[in-house]
Image (cartoon, rainbow, N blue to C red; front, side, top):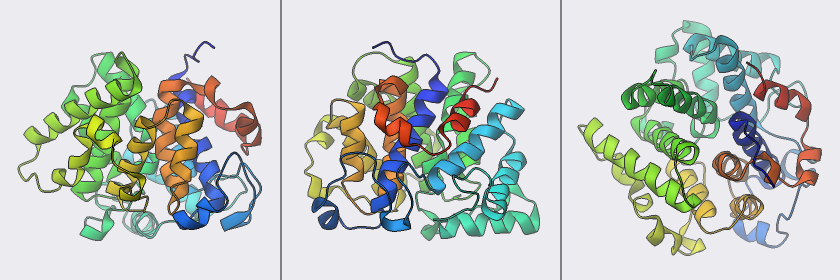
Length: 319
């Protein structure tokens, strides 16, 4: 089947699908999930919602997407205005209200509401290394990759933009690095050649090289050391892969799910069946899987279940 050429719909629908697959089993342990493995879209569960429901991961991804596509760039204040519309008014949601809001994200949005300072609203403390920025960063990654290809951004410009968008809610450098490495992988998928593992490795090689030069203090980069050699990382057993809300765990779980499977369906199911923060691990996995495998490789039954699918796809088609 020919791959869809709209990179926005490939990636964004990958995020939404992974999120929706993981939504019903979020916060359940790996052992609990193993007793009733996710094999497709399922309803109810954690939030008691119908199948195809998606969470804050997708809502914030869509809020970021809408801003970037409408203003044709990255405007931090406009993005935060959309985030406020989500949290306070229920926009960018399946059912008209926000749910499953992370503490760091909630505090950052509330801080912006009070101060209107987009550059200072994200938390900078060590405990602000949850996955709340990584889960929604894909639209900025796609945009920055396009700017690089057009010669309008340098690599440094792109990373600074990614850091700024991620830092709206999670401003600790470790969380920013996760977003940056995700950008390098997404860009490599979009511009590289060869297998998914080869493209991810090429992106990570560039990412680690960039941060080795960019960072004066490499301590936070070292938290990602297992991602430097994907052949070795692929051999890590599942019991040594964590799938918590900690940003390092989430990025590792997503990459591991991608490099130990052969197609999009396998990758997303492997990701959500790890248990714990299933919606976010599914969303982060789905973004890269969607970019590589394409929208057309998402099972039709999964797509048919996605709530507000037509509206989401219209956002992806915006010019």
